[in-house]
Length: 79
Image (tube, rainbow, N blue to C red; front, side, top):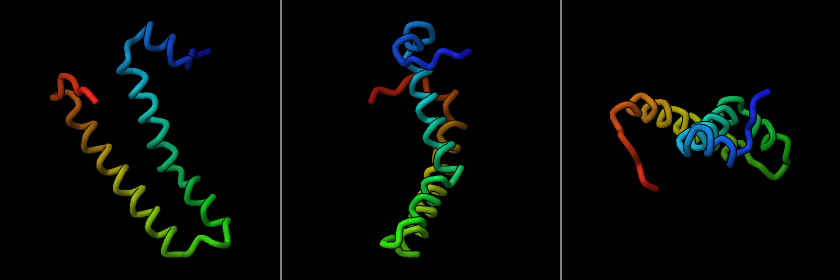
């Protein structure tokens, strides 16, 4: 069983792991299109809204991939 408690992960592996896990969870959610499917179920959401969310999701996924490719060259980032 994998321990996913954020505090314990930070103690065991450092804060970088927590950020990476959160990013993985977010990008996987966008890739799965579950958010988009959920939006399509609501009658007040227009087709243009879902098209915008899809384009936004695609953009985030592409940008995340690009940044991950550069991760080895970035020693640290303070947010």
